[in-house]
Length: 240
Image (cartoon, rainbow, N blue to C red; front, side, top):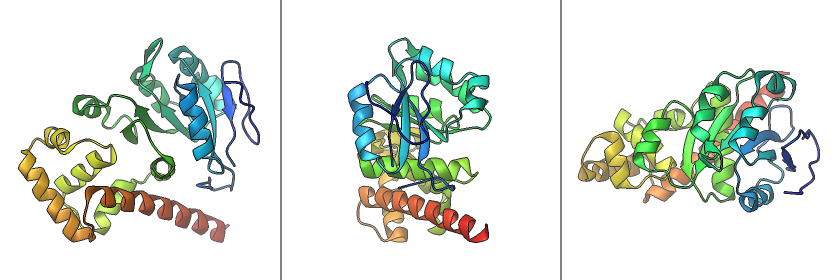
């Protein structure tokens, strides 16, 4: 992309550093994120939206992602998180997931892709921290970073949020589907229930959380993830 990296971004052949300068890691540095995506204009937009929060280093092909996640290469220059597209010019990004999950140190993974239907979402369950369709604005991206960081530390922002509001298992699964921006029809397929039952679950979620729309619920969850991440970082600093 011709964009020069700064800070802790270290260049490798086929990788393009994108500078970031404030969801940050526990050491106070911006998160380092490997982006496997061939949409250079989109990655440049993410650069602007996440400036201050993350250093993005992009590879535009499956082959580039495979090379960058070689275990020896990774150990010498690891990343905190990975943004992974599925539709790459030379392969399916999902085929990188088993490799990513075996890396040490292990990153947290967000699948951010174009078409993400209910079947594809089901296939990705348990294989990444979050799967969400494009486009994603700055607030969503920062929320994704916070969710990834909770996942990397062994927690789950969705489960913690659901526990705080005493959501049932099915209500929690619906919330997870909403974070991934599935429609209620798609969520009904994921949950194995009727559309009318999904509406009933939402009514109970609204009552428990004190929100009036699905979008408000998701926004509150993303804020919760960011605040929980900030609290964890402050606790770490206070204890050091």
